[in-house]
Image (cartoon, rainbow, N blue to C red; front, side):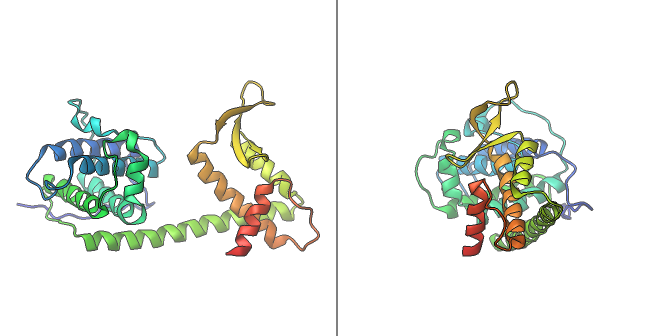
Length: 274
């Protein structure tokens, strides 16, 4: 007899498992999933199916700030790890994140951009990818004897709800950062001081010649490492730069000194264009 599926919720919005544990558990399900030949995806190119599964799982890892680095070859590895993740939580996470990946990301571009991790080297119908992910989510439900079967429409509605929530969260974070930088500027800090302090917090050096960031050499702080900023750090830094540029623009009465960092000026110009 099937069990009723009750969606997982937490008070603080966070799950009880790390992103690595979630991805590892999904990997085990994906390994079993590709062994079956009688599912509705049997007429979809195997390379497309595997590439979409791997790309979606890696995407889920990135949302938890980890580089899970799952390759399609891993789906056929005999290596198996027993990861204890509540199926209620796992299915909730899989449905929500697969829905967001399916409708918010350009699935085909993402798979082809990460083609070194899969065997898909040509464009494919994104509807095939969507069918694979929907079937995979329902496979997890079926394997755990849940009575729930998701539809494409339901996943789309989940995506719309999540997108709205994400936009509200981003707005809240942006306003909080703006308030923080507005207070610093009001207390006499120059925009260049604020910018340099933010870079120091991330151990970065801004290179105005090409407009990029680089890590400062830990042995000799006067040197700048060749490797550019990590993509995850770039996301955080760009959020802060946007907020401080907005705070500065709001307080700028035309008499303030032009910031030395051209990126601040560029962000202000971009904001005025929007």
